[in-house]
Length: 383
Image (cartoon, rainbow, N blue to C red; front, top):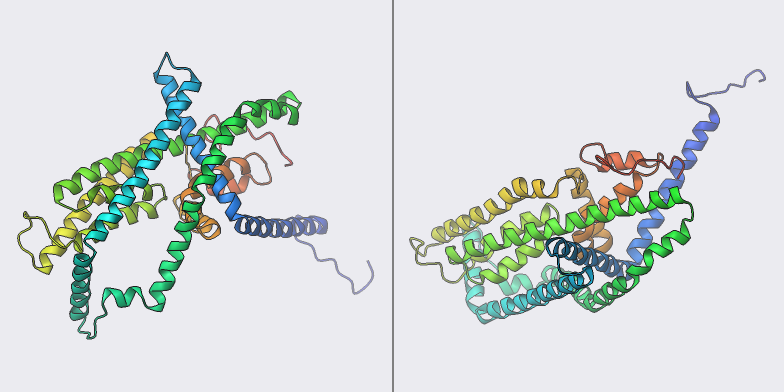
């Protein structure tokens, strides 16, 4: 080294190590951007396929439960009954939605009058004049843009239903050849056993999460339905069906599910006879009671029953659940919101298999142990 030259290094490291770390960081950033762009641009293909995979896992979980409880049915027959049950439930739900929308449509004029009265009351409370009507709010530029987004998202989802069902059918047809393909891809016994163990862990976690979420949503829906009937809320079956679907969206879905029935109750044209009077204050009290009852079921079951049933199948940090909801919702829209939790669980399981990415899995996990007790050991040190 000549005079005037100095070698600046980080204590405890070599210059080559700093350069290598910077290169890896740059590669990670570029790869993440490419993957997110690919997922977003391919959402019309990837999102329906992901929904089909998770619907397939729900059916498989239900078929496994039937097979465990029945000593006479074979697994093929259990799958057949599971498919009939899931498809029957799906088409029944669609019929409930159609009937509910039709029922609200028959009383649309009464609901519109009630909503206009509430808007006028709100403007009067804040001492403002010129209260807009519901039609003016819906058909202005902002309202049209909002409903256009909702209509576009729901239209895309409903248009993909046939494609999703086709995907599910082919997943069942291809299921028998998966083991043979795995053996051909990984001829080594140890490597094949490790990959198979990782796949089993991922599938078991996702099946447990989806099946538990279905049972929890059904329990909350049933209790909410009977509560709404007792409280005299109109179209209780339709509102309960919405709650069933919303509970599949982590955290935010349960909050929205608790708000939907009281919002419909407050604009209900007629309040039940047990409410003292028909003044606006009485209507607000009625909506508050509905909110309290619905929130009680959401809170009690979601915080006491669900953790006991789900166990460690999710193991995601609460902050990560919210972030994944926002990120997957931005990438795939409504399907991404429904699939955000199981997709993030898959990412955590796969990241935990490599020493280079294990730190990401630790950050995603709730307890700092992404593999959990008895999880797949981390044997891949370089992947």
